[in-house]
Image 1 (tube, rainbow, N blue to C red):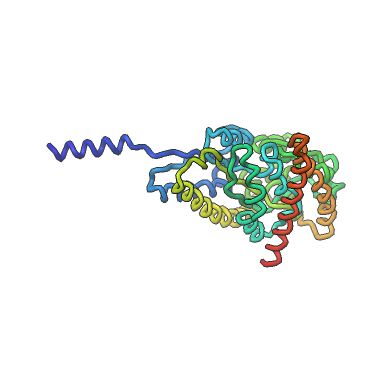
Image 2 (cartoon, rainbow, N blue to C red):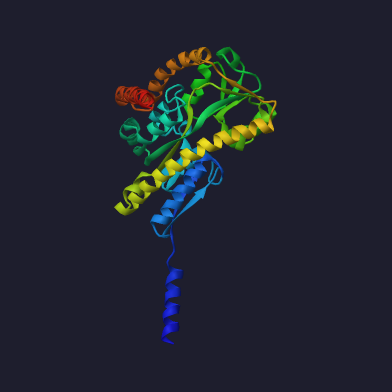
Length: 347
């Protein structure tokens, strides 16, 4: 009888003890790079907590658009969020330095090294996230961004009258204006239908995502301009994180490093695999790699966007803070470029 009572009590305790659940929202879907990131993060958290903490992953659209999930994380409704830098500009204007073309380069080893270990990012840029109650934990490359279109684009003149889907921040929009296109900000769930109906003419994204979203079905050309990688950010609610125990914070840091590695390896593989699938499924789709002379024209146009970036950051602040914000933005961009060059020379 005593043995049965003990078993019943033990069973009752196990029923009463529920695992803590942390919510992680991604702008992407299953099998995308941010999914690989989230799953590895969740795995390590579960392992390190002996199953006491579970990470629940929400995919694109389940909790709203890209901007919606950033807002949910800032308010503390969810604990973690991953979105591209192109969707964060209205929250953290300084982060748009990462979105400037021909700043990060497309050498994946260099990009990964800078995104995960940059002093500029984690000492100068990350504190800006705190102002909107976010804590930047890491950044990840999802591969070189390709242009999609229904004609070859090798010059700024080729972009004339082309409506190109961009992200919602100012710099991506201004980039394609500078290149000669008509930028059209859209959430990614709207893109396939818009390409199919020809309400937009093209888009820009890494190859793996183009394939997963099936955009290669409604585009005839893919261009590789050597412009920049797609950069995803991983953030948590700052107030929530700061109130965690040192043990849980260490757990999050360990899981973040593991997720960084997993996502890096995954994106290299999936971009290669999905390019092969695109070629197989669309043998008539033309792939164009811009040569150095062609890239040089876009690089030159991109230099003017640096001043645009400084203006965007300054305009996000009150009059008395504008000049300081402008100088801060200049320091972030200048230091970031220097770090990329240093990493490239050491590679």
